[in-house]
Image: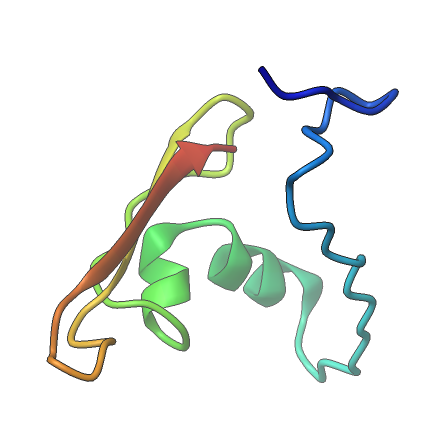
Length: 80
């Protein structure tokens, strides 16, 4: 049985610090929203075959094809 901290995180879990990053994007807000709020948008710059929508509670399926050394695909699933 593992113990948890005050946030419910198992004490034996790896603690990862927050990643804080910013960059200037020279594009209209609507274009940025469209790019970041759909699987089709993500596929243009980061993934290959992802599906999700901008609505809270929407299922997310991220795909990186041929991502590993042996050419295997990597996927991740979640909820917006």
